[in-house]
Image (cartoon, rainbow, N blue to C red; front, side, top):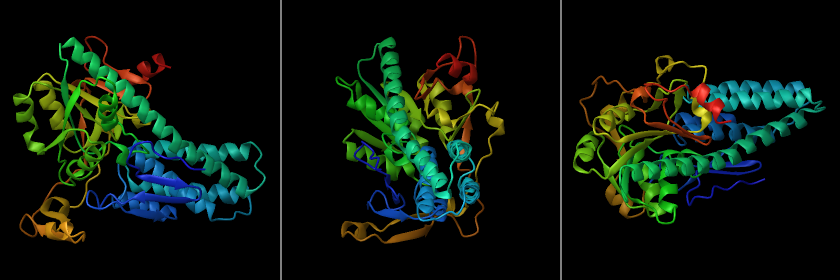
Length: 386
């Protein structure tokens, strides 16, 4: 069974029982795929950031175990259940901030439990139920992303009409496109949907470099270039001045790793300051994420645990040597930017307060705050949209 992403870019390739992922550490200079045979391979791919983006992390984790399970023979249903549960618990340690990963793990464990409850007689039947469930997640993610793109594009176009604009620009942060999902993307999926609409009012996209890992400069640039969408890279620290000088930038559109039930949003570091400057300059600040990124059990962003990464990601810079790239040779070099031994604080994410968020777009629709409210009530609003 094969599911192909419909975008020009395909970060995840699955054809039972083979899984390969686009090695994003080599982008934008080379498009090479890494074979993933086991959950250990999947765990490494997530931790090393060969794959990244909350939706993609969940899918790669699920399918890495599907690839491993495909190679196993289980004596009894309970053997298969124990093996799968242990491996899923291990995969959960790869990215503690990504609620999508934990949501996927819970659903996969339920699929296994349901198979046993339904009378699976062999371990292989349980394993097959697990693989089917993982494959369904891949297919559903693509469809959900297309729905996010549609809802988000309609919302921005409506707001443009309210403001009397017949042409707009948007800005995005980090990478939230096909490379971060099973296809199309979330925040960048909205950009893609706007640009593909007949009579599109989107005429330009700005995207931030996204220090210190440069996902914007490396990955979003790669996607926008592949899709031939007019775009300009800006320094993270230049966004406020950009908004001041260009009034046609209507919205900043970002993704999310985790959204609390009140709308507080954890996303790539630098998102919070973008929300502040959007508020100051009276621009829309839109969060785009699948509903699985919303943690209804979490009352506010104060409960979100933020991952901290190595000092060296800030004190050093890594990249490919220009002269070698021009000759088709990828030679990575690491440069010391700060003096050796310099201390650094390197949180991977920050939390944007809900009061700074204009709208949250999921596959189910667009959520806005009730009149006079500074936060969302996503539990109530989600039930109203069912």
